[in-house]
Image 1 (cartoon, rainbow, N blue to C red):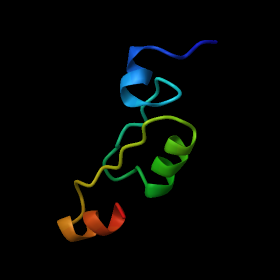
Image 2 (cartoon, one colour):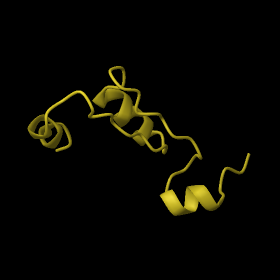
Image 3 (spheres, rainbow, N blue to C red):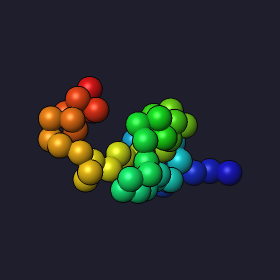
Length: 58
């Protein structure tokens, strides 16, 4: 199946799938796994301080 389309080209991802940043549930491991599979994996940072967010994203 051909997954290439405008979305995959703009986002530079292999599959047009986005793992949702579910507040309180998504972990860094989930984001890493989604990203390693060629998907876009965002991390919800709503429940942590700005200092912890910077540390988490390094």
